[in-house]
Length: 151
Image 1 (cartoon, rainbow, N blue to C red):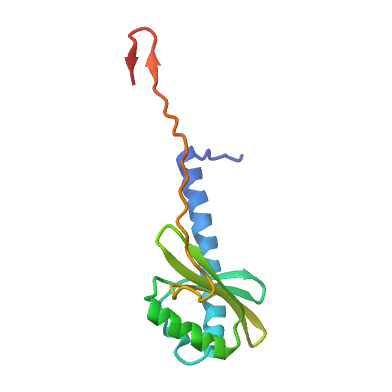
Image 2 (image 1 turned 45 degrees about the vertical axis):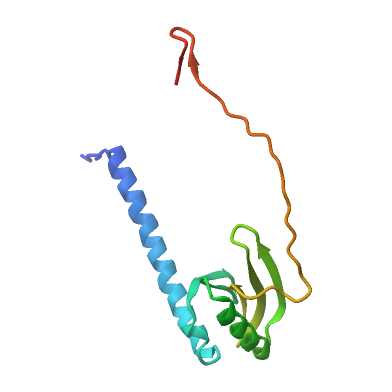
């Protein structure tokens, strides 16, 4: 005689969360293991920068992003990575905080690393122009017909 145990919705939820957590942990262990190999191949001082993100994009391709660098510090770092052989270095303007960021790639022991530097000075051939946009804002009110009350 077999008995079947019913699982409650709460148990299902907890089991699902546990499985997701376990999967996330296994991915983090693998990421850390690969990351340690990459760190050994990086130029001196490179791994000591303030990094915001380190993510695997695909096999043999990783993404690194700095965190809020001061303009002077970012410019010095950009000079260093240019000497290192970074390619495709492009600047982009971020209007929300009136700053610049730089993105490029380099290879380390057969692994491509895409890097974004959060900061840096305005590129010499660029200018920032004020641009004003006027947009119509539409708002809605909920009104109950029975009481004509606005909610």
